[in-house]
Each structure stands twice: as C-alpha cells, then as structure tokens.
Length: 244
Image (tube, one colour):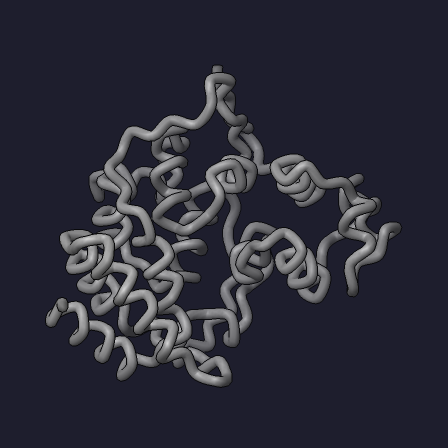
C-alpha cells in the first residue's frame, strides 16, 4: 500500500527520511566538518529552521545537489548553483532527444565531452530571479527541473511520461504515483528513495516500480550540461549531431 502525505513534511521529517535511506544517524553527520550534533538534533526535532550554509553542508554529506536540498527546504537557489544558460532550455531538450535515440556508448561520449567543457569557475546565470519555492510536489518538481535547465518536453522525452501527465503533476492536480516517481528520479539523476522522501510519499512495500522506458545516463547528461554556457552547449549539440 502506498500513502502520500496530504501536507508537506517539515524539514526535520525530510532530513530523517534521507538519513534512513542511507542507514545513517545524526551522529554520523556530526563527525563531518561544518555539521554540529546539537544543531542536527534541533533540525530533526523541527525546533530549528535550516539555513543555506547548513543545507549546503548537509547536501555534500548526503551526496545531493545543494540546489535540490535548498529548494526542498523552501530556500531560493542562489545564482552560482543555477544553470549557467537558463535561456537555453530548447538546446537541452534537443540534446536529450538526440541522445535518447543514440547508442549507450554515444551517450557516454557526450557526457565526457560535456564535462570536459566545464568552466574552472561556475558561470552565473543571466537570470537573477530569487523566487522562493512554493509548497507541494508540483512546486518541488518545477524547482528540480529548473535546477537542471530541463523543460517539460525534455523531461517527457527522458521519462516516457506524457506531457499532459507532467502538466497535472506540476500544477498539483494529481499526486505522483510510485511508478511516476521512479521514472522522474532516474530522469533527474536522483536516488529513487530520495525522491519518494522529498515528495512525502511512502515507499511501496513491494519495492519501487519501473514502468517507463527511462534511458540510463540521460538524467546524468542533463546534469552535466548545467555548468555550461550557451556557446558551450552549442558545442555539445554539434557533437550530438555528428555521432562517431
């Protein structure tokens, strides 16, 4: 049986679920730099609101994207963590569609090429919007997509979910089903159990359900494109148009 929480869980609940997914306790995190046991205990009890510095440290400890954990906690994502070319969503979508139809080896080649183009320093995006994320799964999904410069058509291409279904999820008209969360997690290059935790959805007793033809590494490719300027995205796009 699968149950979804009607109200968004507090950050302490969310953090506890992320720890449980990894078999960790607060003591484990408290041994790491920039993390204090008393502060962690207050967070887990819901007696302390997370702040960006702590959220970044937690993201590093949990192997999560800091932008994702900030969004899940209700904080705006700072410019240095956003995609370098937010105006280039169409290029990312085109790359996804090209890579989806290629061979696995070609996809890995594109990933290696994209990573070779990463700048020495993050390039701040042209957008300076500091909008605070809204509540609910739709708002969270929208933030996770924005963190990856991923459009609805691009997400649909990776997951196999119809754009109409994604539109209902984004608007909050429909809670995510387990199989949809599984497909979305792979497309967003997230652990499946983490997306269940972030969405406030209990894991199915029978385990996760794989029902959509998600291509391995496509979500990773989208993440690899985040630090690239529009000009460097064009280089990757040119490489995708001329496969070896």
